[in-house]
Amino acid sequence: MAERGNGLLEYIPGAKPVAYQYTNGQPLDGFSQNVKDSIKEYAESAQNEVEKGHNFLQWVLTRVFEATEDDATDAIIDGANDLGIDAYLPVDFSEDKIYLFQSKYGTSHSIEAIAKFKEDVKRLQGKDIAKMRPELAHLVTKIQEKNLKIECIYVTDQKVEDESFDSVEIYDVDVIIQKLWDRIKKPAAGKKAPIKLETKLRYQNTLLGILKLRELTNFVTKNKDYVFESNIRQWMQFKTTVNKGLRETLQEVPHKFFYYNNGITIVVSDFEELEDNSIMLHSPQIVNGAQTSNSVLDHARRTHNLDGSITVTIIKAADELDQNNITKYRNSQNAVRGKDLVSLMDFHKSLKSQMENIHYFYEIQGGSFDTKTKSHQSEFVGDVIYNKYLPDNHKKVIVAKDAIQAFVAGIEQRPTEAYSSPAQFLPRGSKYDEVFNEKLKDDYRLLLYPYCVKEYAKRNLNYGKKGGHKTKRYATLFFVSVYFKILHEKILFTKDDFKEDISKLEPIFKSVKLNQRILKLTDTVVTKFLEDTVVDDEMTAANTYHNFFSHHVWQDSMVRVIEKKIKQEEEEIISIQKVVQDLF
Image 1 (spheres, rainbow, N blue to C red):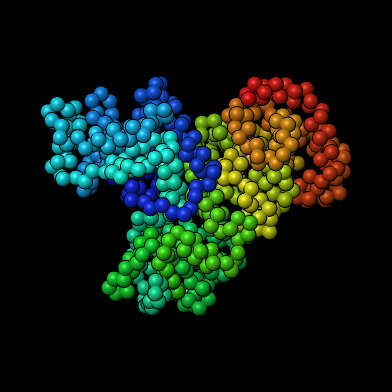
Image 2 (cartoon, rainbow, N blue to C red; image 1 turned 60 degrees about the horizontal axis):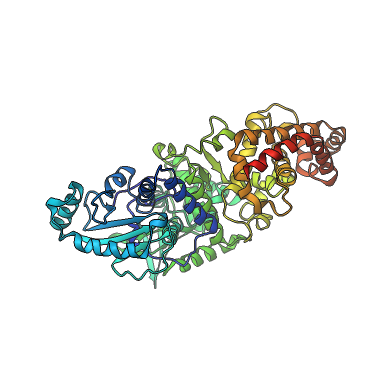
């Protein structure tokens, strides 16, 4: 089956989705809804029902079965006298089997349609080729010439309750979502990578070995696109004391690296012991030691001095639960709180997938965008509407730390904490579990919308370091907080948790001119607030602007000033309210 570049998800080149096995991991709600929305948007852009079905099939072939756009176009053969076959893969007949598709979108799905598809395929090879359409005749000829095994796949955006069709594989909407979810959870599935150890010891399903740093560098470089996906420590980059220590050891006493480092853990679905201590790893994931590996890789870029070795533990995991437990407990010395290690990974992988659906790169690991090829980077063009909030030179990369900081300031209404110490809300941060708990839904808009407000304030309203305004330079996150305060309390009349109403914000953010009025209104309120004498006195008492926005700006006396300034703009607020009511 043809390989495919990134689209809705971060796909696995060369994977065979039909062969995927179910896992115990259930898709998060936000991810599931995102897939449904993507299907609907893609299909409903058509002019008629026939074209809607065609679009849906194109979506399935490219997203789920990883066909290229061109191959998907060639694969679709539905139309008059299609003999019940809507598409086939691979189009180049390069495998020993052929997948035949029947696709039903919307109300066209029925149990009877599945049964008919099954019978149509049975009769296909007995038909007279001379009486077939050319593309169907070509398909049947190739099946006969190559003696291809036929696998029948029925796809629909509906739920199929009765799945008792032994010769037809059913891909209903739940199966589609599950297949895509499994893929982002297990990006190494189907991958193989060799690694050579200096020496090794086997114990049951585990290999303990010594690995030269140069070999580790080669392994990571060749497999960097997927090998770290199970390690949430990729958040930490190279700024912690531990990582600085790793770098210093590599630079000054590389021969001591073996003694100073705990080593790395690689989880695999299987491994093969080859000659000369070479090991073929199946679906390898570095679940503990991402910091170490990246420190070595960073050092390799700076110098050719890669003397030294490291211990490596290669563990064959029985199943996904086993791998998750290994990941969790091998990282337990720096325990993540709130959402546990595995659920946190799922949460941000879901957001990453959702962001990619609208062509933004959600950067969890610092510098990961820069490791992509230029052609891959060029795929991230952003959304034509949301781009209007961003600077013209924006790379369409949304750094997780920046988005979380804006989220805490806006949605959580905690601007002082977001300003003074954003690291508190990252994994291992002291206040991380106050935000990332089980109540937080995996909805990309929770992070995207505050981020857009922050970027718009810097781009258009003179906030941030490049704005030049002496006070607004420090007030960007404060602006984000005031914006959401006005939006929820005065325009949407929200009384509950802001996070519960994120869907209500979409019509506003997609109505850019309307939202620009709200953003301008917010700027007016913030400007008048900053010019108020009571606020000026508080700034003086705080000694510095930084201290004021870190500790004072959201205390009760200051919030009363904010509310007073909002009250002064009541006429404009009422006018905006009327426009917003029309949106709903």
